[in-house]
Image (cartoon, rainbow, N blue to C red; front, side, top):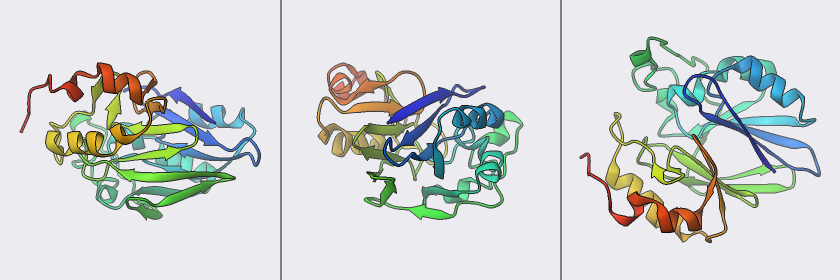
Length: 213
């Protein structure tokens, strides 16, 4: 089961991926509003066993330290984005005057095809660079958590440091568009969609974009 809550500020979607049988859960992208996230979790009757970050930008990690301290669980991120956590320039928080530094860093550095077990559920890490070098998606039986790689009718921005339009399109076309049309997509911002809808309607997948490189 995948459930989401929109966090304050940039409106990042924070997700809870849970196994109905075991009540184990994985928290994804606690971007802001730690108190609200923790209250939301407390209403779900689950045990959070880890926190996964789809990438290292500040709007996805802003509530990380407070939430991690409360839940006392490990943090997962792709190895290529790990340096962003403690660097306000790299995680972009410096540009908004917040200077977020996650000094503890991550506990587990992920790479392509790593498998995460959430109770009886199995989710696979897909490395999808482009928005950031270490952007990942998480694929499992309930759908795809696409982070800031794929959105409803859009894709992640590539004009930030480390971004690449070529890489993000290669990631989407070479991995995500290989999935079945009915695969549900849970993005880092805005509404849910499906692979089939994006294959048909997303203008970036039809070449209707301006290359920023």
